[in-house]
Length: 486
Image 1: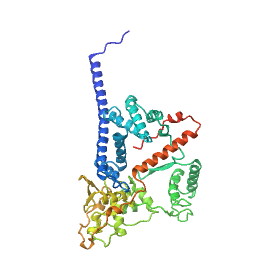
Image 2 (image 1 turned 180 degrees about the vertical axis):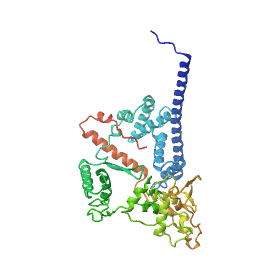
Image 3 (image 1 turned 90 degrees about the vertical axis):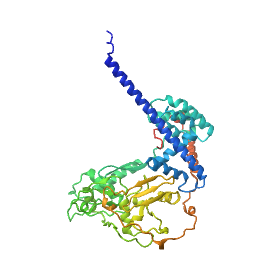
């Protein structure tokens, strides 16, 4: 029995579905084209800026490539690391894999495929070999279709293995890849993921259990909670866990002294247990619940924080401890656009330099990490600071960006206006020195450092390939599941 003929209604639905699928595919191609065009623009910008620099800053710790990377980060509203990734792949599209780049620009491959190809061909040092791989990838990559990460890596590696076995990126050795990663989660908590040697891992687990058992039986926490709290005691170098039974005669009671300092900002009512406002921790992206603040305050050193209001400028260049504490709590992070370096690891920068009459007061001071402090000093960025701590940045190209203190939402009182800036003519000095001589220097240029890393990885690949009994071809096709450094 034959299927019934499609009705006009069904044909209309099929036509609509086909149109939507075509629209989806067109959007995906347009997305790839737009991503490629972004890299093309970045590549042209980098080439222009490097040509202007002409290698004069190659040995600077913050060189011309860093400077243009910051321009890209600020313009796109992204982090410096992501902007640096864009700069690397823009260079590859322009100089290393131009034929594959043209396929990317045309929308024949997506950004994920292009970046994977760039990363996996990064160890090829011979120009003719790289050109041959580029030509082959430009033909084959558009035909691969949908691939997962491992499949994509394996297909690129097959092309590379035919011409340069030592350039095939190999699986990262598990022992060499051990690491500890701390990630922030909500409600004032953090997750710890660690890859260590098996003996050390089991010893760590046993140590946590031992610390968890140092409290008395009246402690109300479950074993899992006590083991989690034991991480803090272990970090402090303690040989016991502070008991929370509340009994005055408990032999295990008492606060555990810590050699590690964290900075938590909270309202006094929250510390006392009567407030409901959350707290903030410098270097922590989330908020800390009030009940956790009250518990932490029992074993913490409390220091009152005073708003300077309309206080007069301080004498000298270095701010007092009280003013420095206020500035770090007000800003929370580095105040350069897109930077989240903790204020506790940042310099206190005068918006108007002290040598040009800039006073040492809250309206003229902000937190800048050392990297961005150097950028402001040597790379033409200028800033204007308002009395509420808002900073208006102007890039060397004339673009303007605004950053607000990190405490503006949670602790708006810290951003209350302070005394306006009044220049001090007594501080004005003439600086006739060569400022470029003060920039910290690299031991190697960026290009030499990259060449050094590539040579080291190629030597390791060659040693592994020539000393292992497994056939070289098998290793070459053993796709590395690790992602490119996006």
